[in-house]
Amino acid sequence: MSTRHRRYRAQAAKQVFLLIDKDNSGTLDKGEIIKAVKEDEKVKSFLATCGEPNLEFLTHPARLHKALEVLDTSKDGEVDMEEWEEAINRGLAKRLAQLAAERERRERAAEKADAEFSVEFLNAARKCFEMIDVDESGTLEKAEIVEAVTSNKKVISFLVNCGNKNLQFLLVPVRLEAALTAMDTDRDGHIDIDEWETCIEDALKNKLAARAAKRELDAKNAAKEIEEFTNEFLSAARRCFELIDKDGGGTLSTAEIVEAVKSDAEVIDFLKNCGEENLQFRLHPPRLKKALAVLDEDKSGEIDVEEWETAIQKGLAHRLEQLSIERQRRDRANARADEEFSAEFLSAARAVFLMIDKDDSGFLDKEEIVTAVRADKEVIDFLTNCGNKNLQYLLVPSRLEAALAQLDSDRDGEIDCNEWEDAIETALRNKLAQRAKAREAQAKAAAKEIAKFTSEFLNAARQCFIMSARGVRHSTSNLRASRRRRGSYAVDASRRPPPGSRAGSTRTTPGRSKSRRLFEP
Image (cartoon, rainbow, N blue to C red; front, side, top):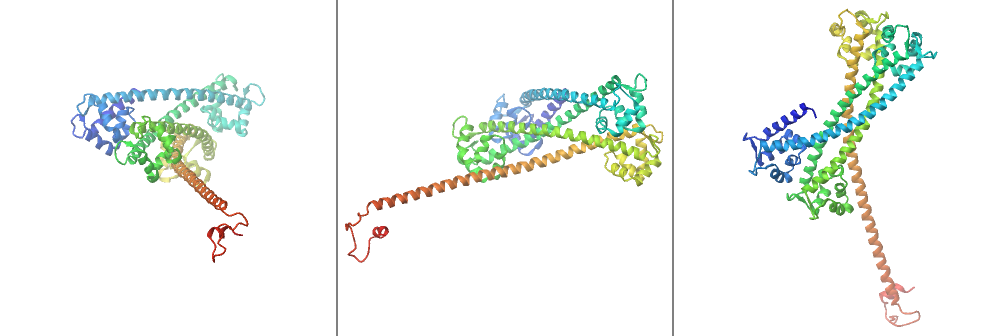
């Protein structure tokens, strides 16, 4: 964590103290804390992620009293600024250790990934040189380069977003000569392998810098996602405990749990997705007793708030691990998709420049632009949603002059290839940001949909199990009853007189006994 970040956390901690201290007494009493953690989202958010358990427990009514006892080191019944700072520093130390461990893990992963990327990139670059060098002379002539960038898709695919401007400009006819001049450092009229490798080294350096910037952005987004998820998860967990604890005793009895998992939809939804299997088993009657035995560490017959928090922290760790794995998979897929999108976008942008530049001068004058934005559908389609306002304003007559003034950075009255490329870089950056934002929204919607489906699926599965178990019990009951009936028949049969015997006969009477009627043929 940077010095600036530490300073920010310290300022945030003091601000939270002041938010709780409504009477400005310089101390926090129980009433102020209870009111703040009920009503102030900023206070709740800070306490949930501060790293100090006893500050976190202030958000949990069942733990509040005990947490205050620990924080109140002077035992005066209130928490003063000094006691608050001590707790904050403990939390900060814990968060710093967590961040350091995460940063170290992230750096190791980045180093490994960059090493793999570098090997792949350099191999691709060398293959690209070989594909252009069709006469295998070890040097690239202008004719070979022109042929390759015109017809070889693999060469084009590598160069289009390779990270080196001069290599990319080999794809732009009006920039080709200038690019070759810049690359041909010994001025012998062709590009040898050393000159190519120099360009590739620069390209790789730029690509690695772009990857580092992307990782930093991803890390910030991940930290935000983790913080939001943790806040929501812990808030839901503590709410769940309170909903189950109907008598407010601070412990959960078997009866309270059984009642809640039968009838309280909010409790059921949380437990299904909490990530801790022993909490999930509470929803499954055949596993309930065993789950309670595991959770009830002190064997008191009830689940107290500390045992609940232990289980919740296990569940949170499991869910965060799942989120991390999913995020890494998503980031890899997004990186590949963005790489492909960038290559297509840059190719389209360069094609549009050539479509506008009718006289092949390498410059776009106002007349060429006006003609293109009126009549050329491909140009219009690209500019309409290209991601750069000044390029888009070329389509708007009343905004055209202002847009040209912004694009024409050297004020020569025309848009040259460098000025166009600068505008396209801005456009691409904005388009990638839009894609990232859209993906984030889609990921949240998908996560919500998956959680709902998982909840419904598990509920259906457990209901199916319960119904099956009832069916088995019902069948067993019927089987036992049937056996009892057959047993009674056997007893009656054993009492029947032997064939031919008249013992017990009632033939002389008008009627027959019930047992006789039952067994006579």
